[in-house]
Amino acid sequence: MKRLFITSSFLFAAISLNAQISATVTNTGGSFLWNSADTWEDSTVPELDYTYNITFAPESGDTAKLCFNRAGDTSSRTIYVMDSPGVNNFEFYGTATGNPTVTRLDISAIESGNIYLYNYNDNSTYRNKITISSPINEGVNVYMNTSCSGFTSTHFHGNLYATYSEGGYESRIARLAGNGSVYIADNVYLLATQAATKNATGSGINLQSDSVLEVGEGATFEVTSGLKMQNGTINGALIVKGQQAGWTGATTNTFHFTMQKTVTFGQNATVDAQVSDSSLARALVAKGAKVYSYAGTGALKFAQALQISDSTLILNSQNAITNGDSKTKFLISKYVNDGQFDDATTTSTIKIGEAEDGSKLSVEKNTIAELQMYSNSVLNLYLNGNELEVMALSQIGDTSNKFSIVLNDAIDEGSFMVKDFAGLTTVEQVREYVFAGSESGMNVEVSYVNGVDSAGGFYISTMAIPEPAEFAALFGALALAFAARRRRR
Image 1 (cartoon, rainbow, N blue to C red):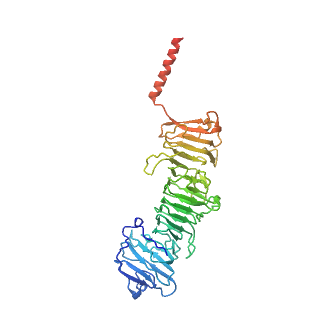
Image 2 (image 1 turned 135 degrees about the vertical axis):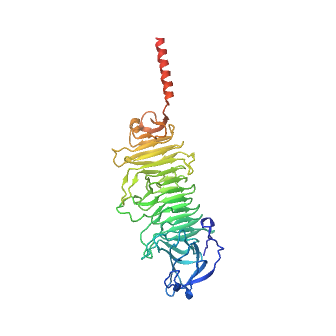
Image 3 (image 1 turned 180 degrees about the horizontal axis):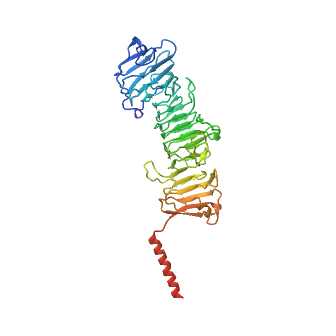
């Protein structure tokens, strides 16, 4: 049996392998509440000021239960759960009697079996919290956010730390939902599946609020029933299979991967967001989200075009995002959050070469194979001195409502090229869709790539608006030239 060792950088400072263990206490079942005497052997409730190893000896069956309703406890605690012969299922119910108190479970001693984390509110003020603060051994399955009949909350609000020992490691968890964060250390393989036991329903890994997903270098996080994440830093592999359930009216374009807040894909990141039927998949940069990509060419694979919906995508590497066929495809449209998957008008942004700290980066030319604009939508574009090539730009929705491309910084001729601009054939037609940003102080210039016609595509650039003094100098020069010409006559 391979074992893991805690990666200290992922754990709270309060957790220590050298923590003083007060005693080993035995849970025998009873009411299963921490503060109930008949829950414990010899009817002695463990005191709050100590840290315990806990063994389980249920009076019958192979299931042990414990609810951490430690009334009056105002500090977080680590509980060391010991392997208990004959026990195959451990059910833990978490509650917080103060904020930010939390129950940390060290389950590194459990060699095999199932661990179910239930969530329980015993008052209306604090949300329950359980943290798995230790490695998960190979023979252990952890089920989070499982159904908890009779209790008021079914969301997981703790943190999961997957750590590494030499030789690699594979851990498995069930469905995640709620405010809990997931931290996966370097070289760990973590598989998250739809909860299928203990009356758990639904599907998808649904990380909420300000939760964080971190995937270390060489690590892999694989989910089998869709993923919704908030904040995250991905430096390893992310594999997203299946769809998120519960979207009414969704017969096509079912989302299976949603990024809600700030997500960064590092240089070594890879994404394989492919499902068996790509027509039933959509990856979404949701309203207000900001996604940074530093990944390598073709490293981030999405089954369809990546949808940018009232959000910002920053490309800090070359052609990282593809649809799996080496084609970079983006859809600029709004997701209407009403249970339907209709597209609508959006104002979204693509930037090239802007680091997380706001500094400008030099990036090789990005090529977008397909850029789809929903009718009346606005795409704010920042090149920051870099190059962009769009092979095909098209409009969807009501084509009588024109979309807009807004250039928000200085763009030299040749730096921004569109091969096929929605089938338009003249520079005058293209100018009706392209505008300079209000702060750029620029005019838009459109020209033919081949200098003759639209066969080679269009160059779109900006040029400075002349200052009044420049106009005066220009008119003065013209006047002098005119006067000289009259004198010659």
